[in-house]
Length: 454
Figure 1 (cartoon, rainbow, N blue to C red):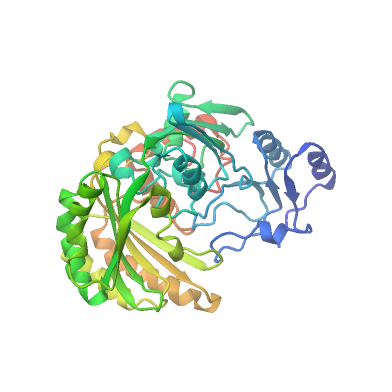
Figure 2: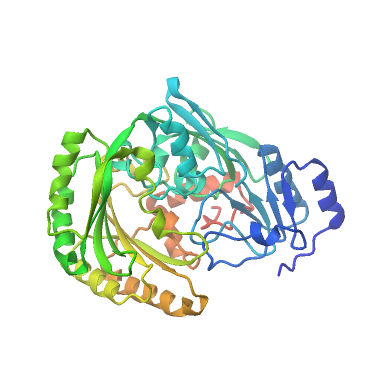
């Protein structure tokens, strides 16, 4: 349980003006509010401040500062590391802030920090518009974007941060600011990939692009075909158009059978899409082939089944030098021995627009074409945690000789700090540390994967 002693008079004063919900450990709803998507995380904050607007954020931050309590910030999604909560801290919980405002004639949308990509896509899709936003619909807009934002449309339109045009946030000293290319440009640069290190971001403005329909879905083959399938994809990826995104997966069918699959999204015309995708559907006799035209918001839900709430998660991820034969063989043999049939391995291919942005243009340093792999271990029984975590670490260690010296910050786990954080920001770390010094010299926002002030 939380051990920080709250000043009752200070909490009472905060309640007088706070428009959201304030939940201390003794309050009804506290245990529900501290639950995260990842059931492996079990933390007990001193106070959960469920904000309804930026003014609530300012007041909650001021309270934490006056009471000398740590701070964490929670958005609307499911960061696997669980850094949204911290023991004995004030949680600035933005998950109730759900507004999405679309201005179709300007091709812009503003979303508050509690919005998920399912909610964002539903509103923008009403106008036949979209922006790069994840591959799982329950992911939060805020967390994904602040960490860079991989998604189905990154080959066509770049990462989420490449479509970000402004961020409203509350800084460590309690100021409400809007950061953009025109105002607070250094802060805006840092927010495009630097994570939650620079303040509590409350609103995001995105550029939108015309998109109503994609050709997408899943095609799967027996695990015995995995070597052929992954080697084929290695060659196929070199000629993929910007409009095509393909994610190879080592996963389990609903009955628990291990399979190799391709998750597909093509944002071009139907005829072009079907011709380009066809080789992926004809490698062998598929055990599943559900690929066809669908609304873009639907393709963003295809992988949701693999990331249910209230289960235990432990992830490891890194960029690979190449999808070599040794890497492929190691992935397949390790996956065949994984201890839980809910676990999967994904490979994300960087290409197209996301790789044509200079490394120094945003805080995201991952701009080279290449492969990012993710081990997403998922299980339901807490007594099996040790064996699942051990298998994940062992598999990661087997692949370590093939890693590039960089990692995607949104996939870092709770035990990834220090060198892992430096690898996530690469050559941009020094500039991020300097901007951190200017906007958060006391390192108030340190519960995230932390950039230490210069």
